Length: 204
Image 1: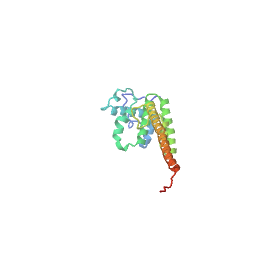
Image 2: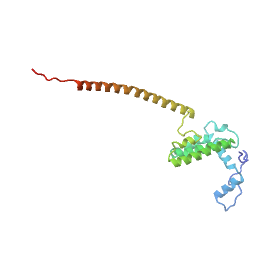
Image 3: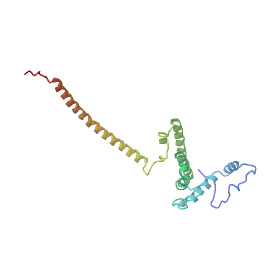
């Protein structure tokens, strides 16, 4: 996938693009995008690169007119700017879009399409279910609350924990019936002895 033919020396701006004076701002934007496909995306990525490189290591090292820096910009700039106003749903959408943006910038449209496709499936299922508990597992991105562990490591540790808990519960159940049976036997034995005890009337 190829973006617009922008260059470092290109100084053309949206306002300089030839448009009908009577056209609205949105119509001018649409006309500009049709005339220069990919130029808006390139300009946005370059802006993300510039702003993300101010005081943050990494973004300035990426070269080219379509630097894949959208996720870097989201993590270093956008999340801190939006702060508490950025809820989990919006953050998830931004992460998905920024990842897709970076994949397209790296000329990986197939991976970007897979990401979008799975997101569509997850949105449909979450809407039908009314929650994200199972729908999130359809996506290709890691859960938002995930840490440095890989998905395989998370599954492994969770499986080990569940197995450990099952073993502990099994051992507990294994011991408690014996105690109960013993107690029942003792209790039953005492009752049996008491029942079988013969009382003789004492006569002086």
